[in-house]
Structures are given as C-alpha cells and as structure tokens.
View (tube, rainbow, N blue to C red):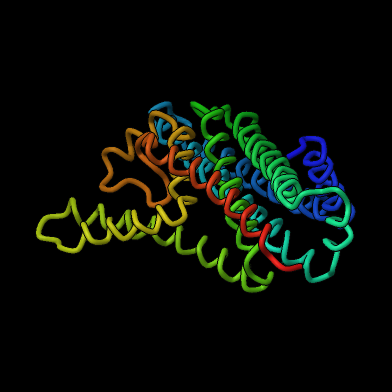
Length: 294
C-alpha cells in the first residue's frame, strides 16, 4: 500500500463531507446542543447558589454540577456514536450502488488503499468531533461553575476509540451488505450494547442483594454482548476519568452506583480487546472488499 494514495482518498473523503454539507449540518446541530447545555447549566448554577448560600451545601452542589457535566458529555458520546455510524454505513455499498467505484478503481489504486483511505478520513472527522464537542462542554462547566474534570485526556482517548470502533464495524458491514441492511444491523448492535450495560448493572445489583437470584446470569449476558460490541463498555471506562472524587465517593456508598457511569478504572483486557477489535474489523473490511463484485 502507498501512503500517498491512502492520504489522497482520505482527503477526498473529507472534501466529500464538506461538499455534501455533512460537516456544516453537524456543526450547526452541535453548536445548538452546546448552546442549550450552556443555557441550562447557567440557569441551574444560578438557581442552586440562590437556594443554597451556606457553605455546608456547597459539597452537594459540587456533586450536582459534576453529574450535570457528566451527563452533558454522555450526550456528546452518543451523538459521536450516531455520527460514526451515519458516516460509514454507506461508505462502500453506497459508492457501489451509484457506480462511483468503477471510475475511481479504474486508476492505479488498490482496493485496500481505497478502504484504508476512507477509514482514515472518517477517523479524522470523528476524533475531531469528539475532542471539540467534549472540550466545549467541559469549557462551559469551567466558565460557569468553575468545575474541572480530573483527567480529560484519558476520557477523550477512550471516547475516540469508541467512535473509531463503531465506524470500523460499520465500514466492514458496508463491504458485505447494502446500505439499508447495514444500517439496521449496526444501529441494532449499538442499542444492544447499551442494553447490555443496563442488564449488567442490574445483575450486579441483584448479586449484592440478599436472597436474590439471576444476578450472575445477567452479568454474564451483559459481558457477552459487550464483547460482541464493546462501545458501551468504552464509554463507561471514559466516564470514570470524568468523575470528581466527591462523585466517586458518593457512588461507592450508593448501592450499585449510577447505571450509565463506571465507579472504577477500565480493565486492561478491555482496552486490548477494543484495539484488537478495530484492527481485526479493518483487516476484515479490506479482505471482504477485495473479493466483492462491483
């Protein structure tokens, strides 16, 4: 494979997103969300200070603002997940349907170079989106309430890895299935991964409850689905680095914690599995496209 050709396809992918106004639409919707979050955060902050002027309640306010910031990033994470799938769901099948690849691949361009160039272009877009949107949400929290998350760098890395994982899976599906079928499959898998996280959370609650059965089976089901698509597990891992010490202390005392967030750091095995997942899916996409009839 030739890096120059790969970069040309990546640049073409970025130019295509601009010409189709995908980036413009994403920017406008994202700015609307950040504006709404800033407005709500500002009103919540002013109202909280007005109703709780004594210093004893400031700790609870800190937990509340940390939770609000965490939910703000949680929405950004799912917007990034949807964006990753929308970008890549028809990356190959859509081009085959309109016949574009007949002209592109007639040039001295390998199919593997086209796939990896496409993938690289989408990776640049999704990582830029995750970093920019999360940075804006965290900036709002800092400017309005003076709240800063403990470790944003690790959280951004894990959220970016989740986006890359989803778009790689969708790209692989696009080499095998029509766009509509691929869309149904990948969005269903995303929903199942989210549901598996909830099932695992409830299973942990049942394991800790006396005279309860079924908790272990629910945890095993949630873990199995998370291995099939570890997107929700990566988000929970990222959320740990966004939680303040006071919020973590509260979650450790509360029974089971909060369903959408983690109370402990990610396991090394999960990170290795997620990286290997991306590598295997990308290699599978290259192999599948090599043998597909255009």
